[in-house]
Image (tube, rainbow, N blue to C red):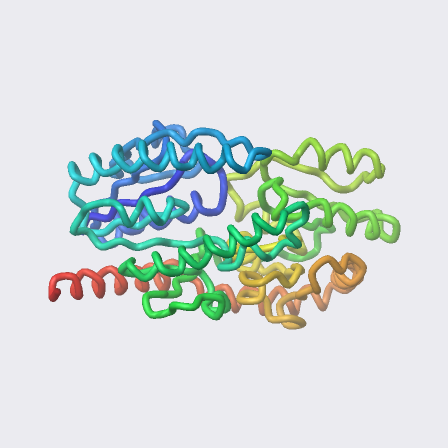
Length: 382
């Protein structure tokens, strides 16, 4: 079986890239699949942050042109130009390698559907369904709101033409109108260990991009409340992104001493095991991979109750707390509760570890294999 993934990049350091590296390696090593990856720019397996099997064939599509975020019309024109040039280059690659299945991640749906091929077409969505309407639409005019609503309607119609549409959580299904070809496959643990944190270190951790959707601005506000009441604990945030400098300026301005922004880490497991609580302040999550990894290391979790993702992993009051969005005072109070109560951390940490075993690699990868075999079987019988 030959599977080709179409993704923007494999050299970046996010959760999608971590999941993709683990999944493709598993397909090659355990199932014996042939795997190819098409990216939007010229890349190398040797330069990736995460490790990819050397048997993977890597191809370069058209490099994506940077967009002017302040000019709505210009963004549309750039996307059209990219759409036309990209589809030609990727079509040429598909004609050459003749895959059995094409899986796209963060690749334009219209582009995927325009590819002329006998291969099964599957799109994998890593964000929640109504992403465009989760935030409060600050600064978006009525015309743009209507355009976005129309885009979502068109997207729904196009989605029906796919063989399968993969989403990460069961919660997200209800936001789709057409559900027939939707299939839920959650992310898998990227590592497995019998070890768990002692939960004795006065350390709290968060992992994610320094971008708007992770809302580390809110986490800094929460920590400002915490540090006035407890100066013994430390908070480390691991990631990279465009807002790092802005966040560092805010930390310095407030004069917080025990919160630190750090670079991304490859060995997530070892760092998680040194901490005693995991925190997330995301405005939205497709799944929450870092939360799952923290659970597997036996950490209690605190997260804002965004649309999907955390609520699929966290049992409120059992292995952590789900806090109403933007309620930083409730968040701080629950975090202080865990900081001051070792037995509560220990109880919740045990439940986190137990819950994490529902997402082991073997379980999730077999879901993918069953899906591939099903769609290929149906395709042969057409």
